[in-house]
Image 1 (cartoon, rainbow, N blue to C red):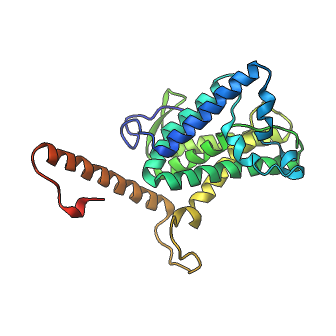
Image 2: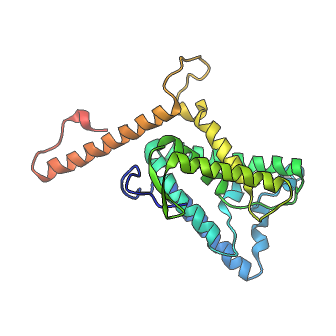
Image 3: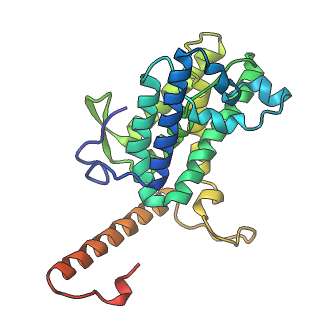
Length: 268
């Protein structure tokens, strides 16, 4: 994971929207709660909210594919810091393009979808009592979305090597796939690689679904001619967002220099 370079779009560190802020606050608050409980011997209070395949399949703990996203390893800070840093850097830009509602929809589609992939993988390879926590599945979905929307953006891989987002995403996807194959052979590392790969794959398909591309359209049952791909659509949405921001800045400029209010047709 790395910080965006000078060619990152937008060119400055992104401003977190309401969705990203909410996720940052809830995840951080629950991590602090778990951190305190773990040192007081009361972490068992949060165990029913972890993702345990056996609990979901036989105990009908249907909330777990959702609640596990908000829990992180209380034994250290690297897990929560990595996920929250990625959420801020990549999620803020995506929310600025999509809007809060669509961003949160995509985030939870990826996170819950990753949880279902974990259940399926553990059912197939064994390990129904394995516990999974963390927002990494949703984060990997954000990574694939960022790579599709800003393929030419430059980020610093491992904080050192400048790399285009499309290559970074390809490398992360390959690592997740190979790690999942290793995990399936029993070479466990304490990391839920199936969640990473699941979030990546679910995010890829979600981007190409009408559920994401059609946001708010009521004519789903009617066949529509094929239009621009999702990448072109997202880039156009980003350009529209930049144009709206430029108009707002121009409005402020006119007011400061006695120009009065701009024409009504510029008001969004």
